[in-house]
Length: 158
Image 1 (tube, helix red, strand yellow):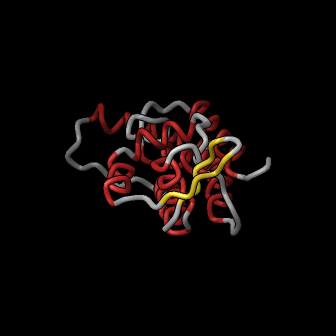
Image 2 (tube, helix red, strand yellow):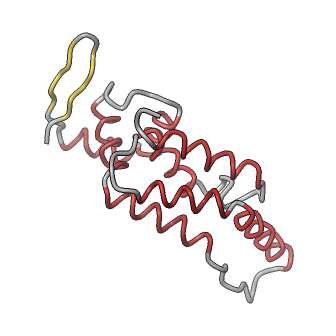
């Protein structure tokens, strides 16, 4: 596998080593944050590798399924303290309130064609961050805003 790294006005062709691939996997969250904030995916080998992982069909399918799972009825919490049950119900209500945005995001992630690394990094962070608006905090406005932000950045040239 070869990776193209952009250094204006030149482009380097690099064959990533196993150590570089391992480092990209170990630092995936940090790389996702960088990509989500607009870092150029072609500026380093690690970012290029992570961008490639995020935009592959398999990862897109996994993330769409993760979003879809959040829209399902949560399982009952039989042995959970009442306060935690209330928090879970409140968070699920926030997810349901943002359902139109989440469904739009699922559709965009599954749509055939290219997507940007930035958009997929935003989706990945939305799904995987346990302290984020999808899983914690019951903040409908923030959840909707994050979905819209990811939608805006998913499509190349938009």
